[in-house]
Amino acid sequence: MKKIILAMAAVSFVFLAGCSESETGAGGNTAAAVANDVTKTAEELANSMTPEQKASAVNDARTAAEAAAKAAGQSDALIQQAGDAAAAEAKKALGVQ
Image (cartoon, rainbow, N blue to C red):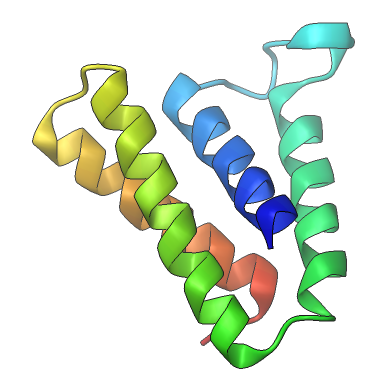
């Protein structure tokens, strides 16, 4: 469960950083490549999760993204957007409707 939360938090941080595909991160990987790796990992983990675990992971991703945005001093609107984006990506990665 902790791995999925960390994966979703990583997606949230990529979103918050506002990275474009042309920017590179640590090790020369593009932000898009890192996001793709995180998504693949999340999909692999999702195959072994129950529906209840998936729902919890979506909520945890939202909470983590909102906490990160708040810690970064973002406005209430951006905090909400970060949470919404993280929840949407978590649902997508986990195959939740």
